[in-house]
Length: 232
Image (cartoon, rainbow, N blue to C red; front, top):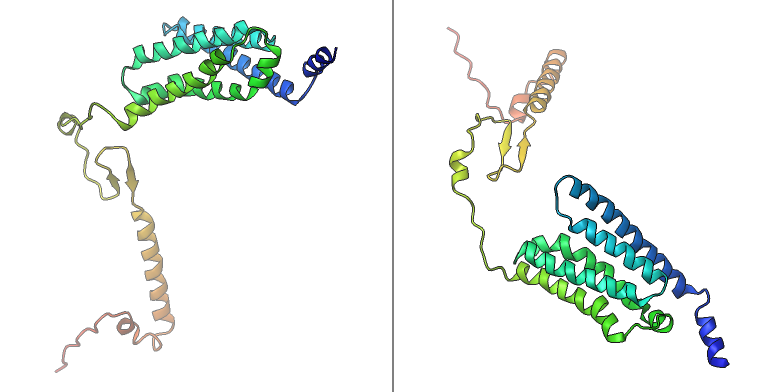
C-alpha cells in the first residue's frame, strides 16, 4: 500500500514532470518546423531527409510526452539514421558534419537529466539503451565532428588560376582591396581635403585680421622664411 502510494505521488505534478513536459514540447515544435521546411525543400527538388527526420522527431516527442518507451527507441533510430546519413553525405569533412550532427547531439544530452523520471514512469525503458541513445551517440557525433577538424587528411591550397582569371580593376588611391578580395577599405580623401581647405581659410583670416601677430607664424610651424631679394 505504501509503495503504491509513493508511485502515485511520483506521477503527480512536480518540477521534474513540468520541465520534462516543456522540453518534450520544444522537441515536438522543432520536429514540426523541420518537417514543414523539409517538405518545402522536397517540393523544390531537394533532399527528403529533413522532412523524414522532422516527422520522426515529432512522433517520438509525442510518444515520449505520453511516457511510452517506443518514443525513446524511435528517437534513437532517427538519430542513428541521421548519423549514417551524415557520414554518407559528408565523408570526412568536419565542417559539413556541424549542421548535420551538432544540433542533434545538443538536443539529446539534456534528456540524460530526466533519467530518474524515465526510470520511474516508463515501463519498458532500459538504462543501457537510454544512455546509449542520449549519451553515447551524441559523444560519438561530437568525436566525428572534431576529429576531421583537428586531424585533416587533405590540405586545401589556393587556386593559382584565380590570379590570372580575376578581371583587372583600375587603380584607385581611394580604395584598397585585400588580396583575397573580401575586404575593401575606402579612404576619406574628400574629408581630408575639406579639413585642409577649412584650415587654410582660418589661417588666411587670421593673417588678414592680425598681420602683426602672425609675423612669426611660418617659423613656428617649421616653415623656413623666404629669402628676400636685395633691392638695388
